[in-house]
Amino acid sequence: MFFGDATYILIIPAMILALIAQAMVQRAFSTQSRVRARRGLSGAEAAAAILRSNGLAAIEIEPQRGSLTDHYDPRARRIRLSEPVYGGTSLAAVGVAAHEVGHALQDASGYLPLRFRHGLLGPAQIGSTLAWPLAIAGLLMGSNQLLDAGILLFSGAVLFHVVTLPVELNASQRALAQLTRSGILAEDEIPGARSVLRAAALTYIAAAAVAVMNLIRLLVLRDNRD
Image (tube, rainbow, N blue to C red; front, side, top):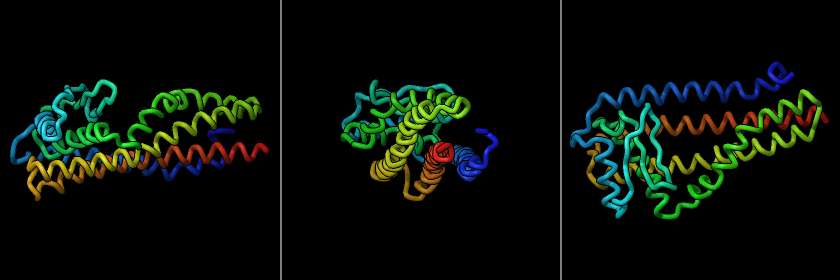
């Protein structure tokens, strides 16, 4: 009824896009990880240099286990870089590190989409956890109330994905501008870093597309019940 109905075809293109995006980001990171930045700064050193030049030296930078687990924690005011990025001196490492600094710059400037996304984080996590069990239970039990509750909760998760897009794109723009302005990367090195950030941006676009299409699918199933 739920996994075999015709509406499942709605999310197939978005799922294909997600797979392509993941492959692209892995390929771009792998390729640019083999290209050493001429100045030889590690990701952590590049991030620290950009923070200092923007009066944000108090923000801590620490290593994080895993690959591509890099993120900025606005509550702790810390930048956590995966081990290949933290100590790496490649264009990929420097580009990813600068992107996370871009989020710190957003936070410092009061960038509204970042604050909005941070406010949505809790509801989005709850929605992602409870939405599908409620929606599936509503479909199996014939309860529109449960289905509607699932749709409402999932809408919060979808909104989080949509708001994430401008936040991530803006962080990459800030990162490339800082790398150019600071001279951490030469002009002819910027395209290498940009290729990694563009591939990463596609993963966020794909995630938003999957979320939106799943929401549309739930709404179609709800409409069909009526």
